[in-house]
Image (cartoon, rainbow, N blue to C red; front, side):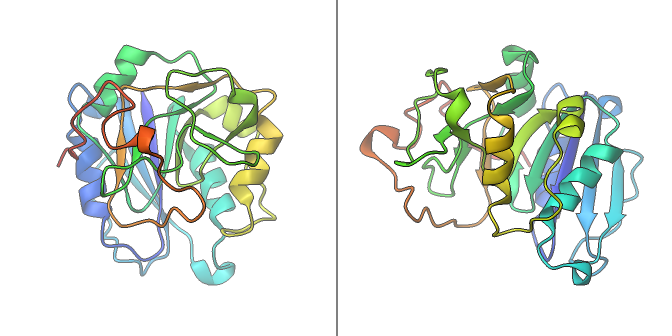
Length: 228
């Protein structure tokens, strides 16, 4: 059972993201919900669906206040497993099938994250400099991992016990702070079978691709198609 929480501001991708969730093979409509949180004017219509909730959060209160949005998703989540997503992240085919295969013995979990060009973005990734990608089959560095605030999965209880820092906004290192606070107490795992993909270009900045992490070479999946 899953809660998918999508934080948005102004976006054109919500319809496609919702389709990528609703069209997941094996995902029963009675066993998941989608929570949308963002401003009333954000190119997001109010969906007429029993498992889609709209939480209106006006950005004018405090621009970039992503931490409270994620905490509100957690507080309102109906289900134990929570997938937190920004408004340009879509699930690839077999994301749910991949989690059913991988299992649910974790507090926090990550999956492969792909940019439009197929390269990895900040998924299984160290927090401390030198910043570097970690092979998906290496579980030894979970106490020094960085979790990109764009997307991750967590258990509701763990997220309630370890909320986002509401004093911080987007761009103030809120994801770094949360990772440093949680990394010594979480059961953090990489699920290599489920994949997400960005729907817009992202700049890697100092997290540049390395030849051994070329597209489709670091996980068992070869198809990064978004399910729409």
